[in-house]
Image 1 (cartoon, rainbow, N blue to C red):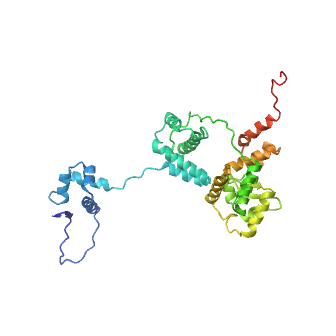
Image 2: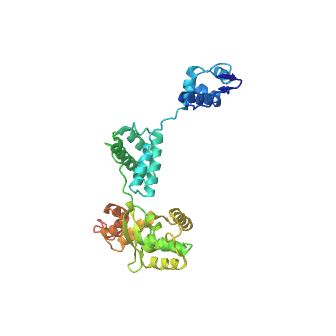
Image 3: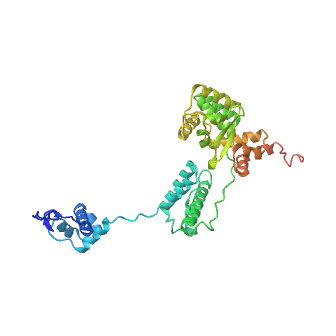
Length: 354
């Protein structure tokens, strides 16, 4: 090895008259060459940080004035070794959820909340108290403790999976779910739905608003409807619902009229609308800004349930028409109507006295 100012180089063997011979790669020599190359490329601050040598000494080594010590070479070699990548359990969990066909909104929901959690908690070392402290630190939202409850559900799913896959103790055992207030969720009146339809900019947008209100469709269900899914005679359409369950959704005369007009001028080659979920959401937001009326898929779904309940349809039938898995959500959506309905029969207990 010869030194030149400013660089450390390995001298070339002089050519000899010997016949060429097969050379065997010496892994040790190759490793040393890589270490020397790294020594030349790294700046003094990085070298000092990884080796604990002074910059003065390192500067002399890099300039060829002093030989590199075995300790320095070992430190550089350790630095150049490929680092063992830590297992990203969250990514693996997401892969597992995708494999069982979780919906895209659910996947986004899990991903956002889990990585936020991992930013502040070492999830492999967490215990029940750690989780409780984290949940208690989640601020209340406009929907009371809904955000905290969302974290609870997400962490429960994640830790149940990680316990099965890796045998890690589940810190969610013993952690109680946050108690949610039974709020009366807002729904639109029939007049408000009509005002939104009248204010919509195109026949397509009118058809979308009408279908949301008459069918109680979720955003993904409405977005993915194909022309062949429509049964005009039966006034229903095939949809791929929550959990990728195939189902039928009804629609009424209003939707039939607007949808027929829209399809007379538009020939769909993908879905009915030529829009993805974001395009439909953007249209609803513009309409809300224009009218001042709440305009989103969840509100339309609640409106669907409440308007049917006002029409005298029982909650079990609404559950089937709206493709809900349990009566609990239907009852939650229609709680405001139930109170209004009961008020029709209310009489002041003091009326007889007065």
